[in-house]
Amino acid sequence: AQSVTQLDSHVSVSEGTPVLLRCNYSSSYSPSLFWYVQHPNKGLQLLLKYTSAATLVKGINGFEAEFKKSETSFHLTKPSAHMSDAAEYFCVVSDSPGGGADGLTFGKGTHLIIQP
Amino acid sequence: GAVVSQHPSRVICKSGTSVKIECRSLDFQATTMFWYRQFPKKSLMLMATSNEGSKATYEQGVEKDKFLINHASLTLSTLTVTSAHPEDSSFYICSARDVLAVLTDTQYFGPGTRLTVL
Image (cartoon, rainbow over all chains, first blue to last red; front, side):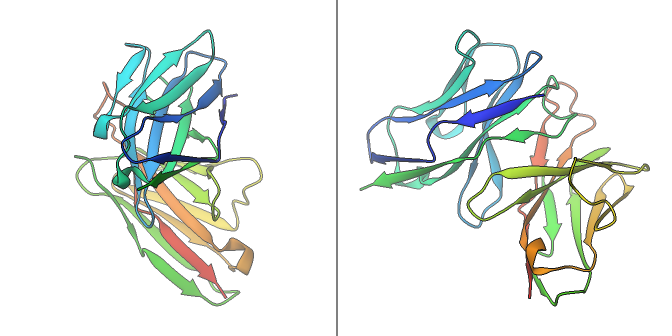
């Protein structure tokens, strides 16, 4: 069985400063890992995913994440926060290779606040 | 890109009535669809996996007689909340797996349906 722990329920940064959203996972297999973003009253949007290829994954809107097997981590980063990045972010794990075959396991979410 | 729609986006119903939520893959075929539930300020919880032409597989703790799932075609799955009660009020989200996207094998999420039971 897999699980995901998002270490911070809320993260607040100033606009223009770096963003770090932390995620640790547990999986019996080689996991697929994802970051999704959910803006208020909007659907889930895939930011990026790791599926056993390059450990540094680049996503949309300047986000990237690094898969570290030794630390069982998949932290999300962005060099410079923008006001439009304010949203709820979910770290997600799946034991299926691309994440499509099985239901996904979501972390509890991290609410990102951007201070002007 | 792959688009998944849900209808309705919002529904308010009286306690004891049934509500049907539709999930459609608009530009791809989906042999598998998933239903999730999201409580306010909480994470998404997988409720069930819906496979076209067969019975849905429910997660532990989800009442299959209360949450009826039908996946009659490759582009449509429905979730019916039967005899709804206020505690069923939640945000219900579906996702669909693109059967032809073998290389990416990604789930695409619908925008969600907010159910309020009075």
